[in-house]
Length: 147
Image (cartoon, rainbow, N blue to C red; front, side):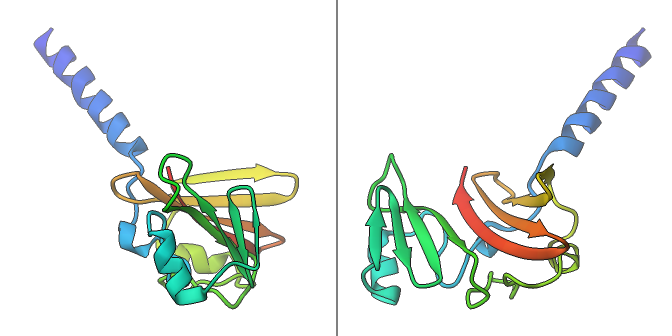
């Protein structure tokens, strides 16, 4: 009986361990010079004032940031559809989706919807994520955000 219980506990731990995300370092979840959780003042110091503010979205040339609801002076999300902005690892919009596996390994989550595939990688502490939207094998959008 003890062996069966031990086997069940061990199996449960292995199952939960395999669903744990935690695939990349949080310092790799960055776009351009901005990462989720950065103060808005840092964004302004680097990129200046936004071209436009629409609700919580601050629109810049080539990217946007979304301000954190709970902490309005901080970045919750940064996203781009412009190949002029790279991730910390050099991945850009317009690259082949094969660059994702080569750079980050297997995605923690893959979702398919309306001809688009979303590859999501979580930080080791699962507090942040980087997501790549892919259509026809090409990266069309990159976003980094706090969970």
